[in-house]
Length: 307
Picture 1 (cartoon, one colour):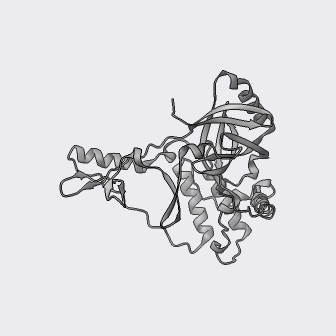
Picture 2 (picture 1 turned 60 degrees about the horizontal axis):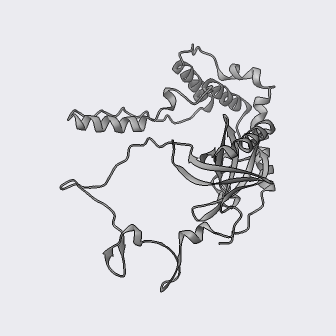
Picture 3 (picture 1 turned 120 degrees about the vertical axis):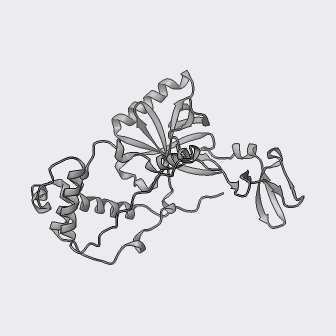
């Protein structure tokens, strides 16, 4: 059972749902420690008081705000837990919106919300079913780790998920990163769509979606433990210089088909893409661009939050 990170309640109008928050993800990365290479002694970071020049125990350490270099305002955990905010002890639902209206760049870590006891079972189920049938997500505010945050509640299976959202003013404008204006032909767009069709999958599972980096680290550790030769790294493929975009698209389609065990054949991407010229698929990028422009116009800059 995952450890409870935070306990509180979801506030949905006059409905209150007691909840426990647990992490929805796991990190399987291999971790390293720091060692002194001469004798392999462990290197650790120690907490030292600058005034007394001595190492201090965790029980002696607290939080403080530096007003000036000579004056620090101490802040206790009890004071932080009793902030004059409605979101200090509750996930406060403020609005509902279609999921497709939320730009994925704003989404952060996800957490499962577990019902806080039998008394929460019915209102929890009610919120799950309401969100499921409406095909919407709930936009909420909550206060964790020293700041008020924005998030969305959505349904995964029969569970509620709280997904972190960045505030609008935390998203950088990408305009300055755009390349110089250029044009692409309809044939080139059709070729890219044909390549996308060839590379489309039904689920993000299987060999293509395996953490090969962690596997490679494990192989190195095992080889050194057994005092065997280290595994050799494959020669990286040198990216070819793209002189003919259509030729590159054709070659990419054939390579993708071969990787899936399909008959690549001599087909050109022009022929693969022709039947899709009148479908909504081709128009979809323009719609998404328009939607983003509309969303950008409607999203006002958020005023700085008070401390």
